[in-house]
Image (tube, rainbow, N blue to C red; front, top):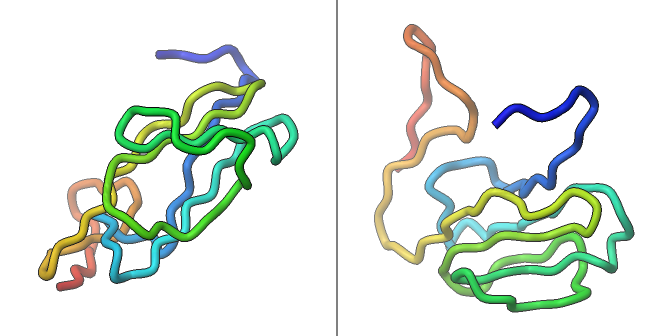
Length: 104
């Protein structure tokens, strides 16, 4: 969907920036959007999980996470896996011809 010029949306930042995200990487999620940081609502597996939470935290269990900020709405979701072996790639937009570093 197209947004009006200057419109902001809530973003969910993931560190380290590898996809898929896995627990053994000590994943930190940060919710970015306008409004006060104490007004962040977190969702886990599509259910409200933490109301008036902080804007960032370290994930301790696998699942699907989203955050909500009052002025900018619900973020896209991110899956956090608890797998022993995964093939990861950098979390950025790739186009044909890009050199990519994979991580196993």
